[in-house]
Amino acid sequence: MSEPLIIDCDPGQDDAVALLVALAARERFDLLGVCTVGGNVPLDLTTTNALKVLELAGRTDVPVFAGCQNPLMRPLVTAEYVMGNDGLAGAELPPPRTAPAATHAVQFLVETLRQAERPVTIATLGPLTNLALALAMDPSIRRGIGRTVMMGGTMHRGNIVPQAEYNIYVDPHAARIVLNAGLDPVLIGLDVTHQVVNTIARIEAIAGIGTRAATAVARMFLPHARIQEGLPPDAKPRGLMHDPCVLAWLLRPELFGGRRVHVGVETDSEVTLGATVVDWWGVTKREPNATVLKEIDVEGFFALVSESLARLP
Ligand code: RIB
Ligand code: CA
Image (cartoon, rainbow, N blue to C red; front, side, top):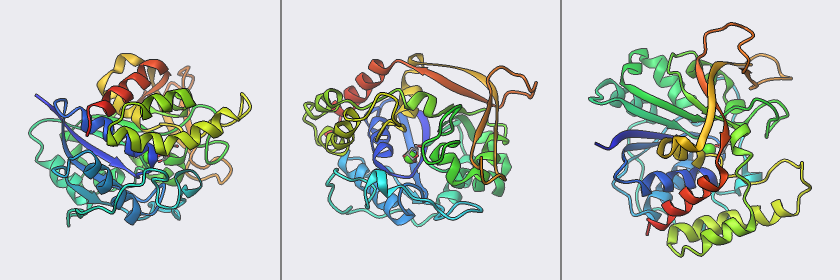
């Protein structure tokens, strides 16, 4: 039986790779829908990009649902400086021939989870605005959710600000709602994703796969790898494949290590806004509410990504 899956994302170069990994595992996942949110680039572009990636993979059978344009309480902060103005710099994908569904992503989440006959896995790759609103609209949808795995957070250094990771920082209020909803998510943060550094050799190996999907991924990430290799050892890693780590965990959890802990989110202080406060040693005695991952088998990860891209057109 394939696993019912909903992916909520803000494509975004690394979101695109995560979608491709999911689409390549066709026998493993029943991908019910792709929800988009304003994030790396504005909603109209994240939605267009999701359509482009599904067409690249030959999977226009998967519906796309556009979601929230902006975070719950803060202005949207985008990341064109990493992803390019259209969000998929380098991919050179044609304009989509398909269109998103008419249903809003939050409505899709609520309706789908209300009537789910089997628990649905939720994978989030962007700010958590859509999922938070769906939980606010109807908390009972929790009963339709099986596993939740999210790219977000950091125990140490941030990426967009010193203390926070982008997805959480953009909508910290949504992150707090989701973390307090009893979903017991798996959280894959920068402590993991900063290990999957793009080297020129790794990306050239992807380019050598030769499929359209692999070629598009290599085009997106080779420029990042070239800059990465010129950086000093302790510089902030560049243009990482954060989001595919979420699909890698779903497909091969043995590649990862972590522990169940309590995670809080700072939503008030301007100085530490978006910080994920991870009680790794349990010093607060607060009930754990998430599994935070810390280890990853980097070679195993890139092998999985390459194997996936080789399975696509
Ligand atoms: O901090 C990295 C995360 O923010 C990734 O999901 C990237 O796509 C952006 O959404
Ligand atoms: Ca993302």
